[in-house]
Structures are given as structure tokens and as C-alpha cells.
Length: 364
Image 1: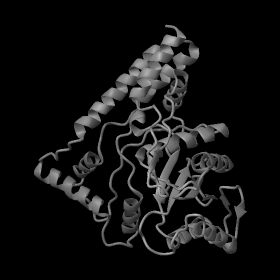
Image 2 (image 1 turned 45 degrees about the vertical axis):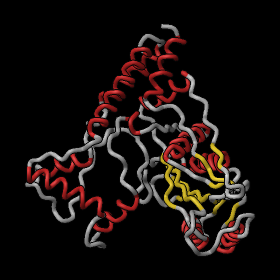
Image 3 (image 1 turned 90 degrees about the vertical axis):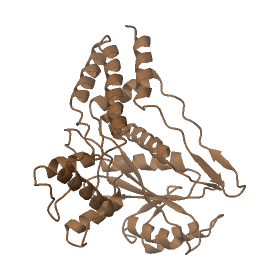
């Protein structure tokens, strides 16, 4: 099979794995009232898709990009800037590359946001005036490279906005907090959606690779991951419950527990409308990887190795088990009841570098 044919097969089936870049969302022009849409990225070539497949097959570390919140007024923004600067002790860098350290310097940055061409009120919650973004990699990743990649990412994606970022070194996972003013210098307001987050992940991974760091940004489906990462607020509440600081876990956690206990007690399986789609998605993923592996197996030695890695990836994918099913399975071994502060079971982990999952900020 020729290289051109192999590349064509990889491109076709790679798109079915959702490897194609996503399309940006609309942003509102608050000056004219009109909207603009981010340019749609060009579809990836066969070689580019092959590189991503190769990274995925060898379980390259996945980047984490998350919107952790956003201020609706300067009071909120002040609190966040104080947090990421550790009350002035950690330096923050702005869109011009200027470094600010100390409470007075941080205050000057806030004043420039509040009194710019399009100001921000000190109080009131009419709309989001800033977006707080977290960029992270797994423990062991070079911290300076992560910071440098974050700088280039911010410059590329938010070059027309005021922003500041700070690298934190007090966690095992290197991560950067990026605060972006919602309204750009051209009056266009950021309107990030799920697709934008995936696109940002891809761009951040690219900037890391430019720094010599192996990084990947694939959707869960391409890695065989079924369960979504828990929302930050839910994890925070559950963690406080485990530490005895709350009387009960998060509402969604309690609901899962009730549903699982009811299924074990009554023997009536809880209907999951998404189950068929989840199973079908896994089959589609396995089929796509099978086609790609067969094509690569006809190529040169490097292609054959990628094909072998793909086979291993598919063989080691975790079972298609939802959070509810995992909880039910654990309950069968405890007489149908969970102990008061027993942790909710997690999906079995694969032996891979995987995505970073910081204790305080995952999407994740």
C-alpha cells in the first residue's frame, strides 16, 4: 500500500475518531451589536492525523485546559488576581510581556482593566467580565516549558484582549492560571463553548510540543475513556464532606448513591438512555483504530510500530462502565449500602501518563 493511500485512510478514519479541529463559536460585538465567528481551522492532513494517532497510541500525556470560573465585576476579578498572585507574592505577566509583582503592582493592573476603553463595574452581576482559565500538565513536566507554552498560547488566542497569567509551583502538577478580560480591544466579547475548549487544548498542546514537551489533546472517546471528569464544585463539596466539614456530599453524589442502592435493593436495572450511544461509540472507535492499524501495518517499520501500539491501546481500553454501574458493582459487595463517608468508586485506571487531574481544578 502506497504512502498516499495510507495517509488517505488515516485522514478519513481519524476524522471519525473526532481528530478534526473544532470550529470556534460566535463572539458578540458589544459596540455594534453584531457578531463575528472565529475562522474555521483547516482540516488536518493525513500526516498530521498520523502524528496525533501515534501520540495517542503511545499514550502521550494529555493537556488539561479548563475554564475554572470568571468574574462579573471588579470585586470578583480582584479576588481572583489576588489568588493567582498569592496576594502579590507570585509574579503575574500581562499581554505586553510586562511583569507585575507586589500588591501595588497588581492593583495597577486591575485599574487598567476597570478604566480601559470598555470599563468594568466594581459591583453588579450583569454579565461575565473575565474568564479564568487553567492550563495544566501531569507531574514531572518541565515547569518552565509549561509557563512558556502558556505565554505563547495566550498571545495567540487572546492577543486582542487584556490578560494576565501566573505559574504556580505549589502543586505536583505544573499549571498556569490565565485571567482574560472578556471584551477585546475591538469590542468583541469572548463567548467560549465546549468546542472552543477542545480547540484551546489542541493549541496549548502544540505550544508545548514547540517547547520540546510531548503533549496530546484528544477527546475522551479517542482514548476509550467513558466517564467524564467530575465537576470542580462537586469534587470540592465531596472532599469537604470526607474531611467532616460538611454534613452531606454534593447533591449529584447523593442522587447517584440513591439510584445505585435502589437498583441493588429492587433488582430493577436503572435505564440509561445514553448507554446504547456509549456502546456504539466504543465500537466505532475500535473499528476506526482497526482500519488505521491495518493500513499502517502495510507500511514501513515506523508505521508497523504505530500499528502495534494502536492494537495495544485498544486492548487496554477500560471497560464501558458508567459511574452508576461502577457504584452498583461496589454495592453488591457491601450488602447494598455504602458506609456514611465511603468514597464513590472510580473507573479502573489504565497504566498511562494520562491527563492531569489536579485536586483543585479539573475538568476537566
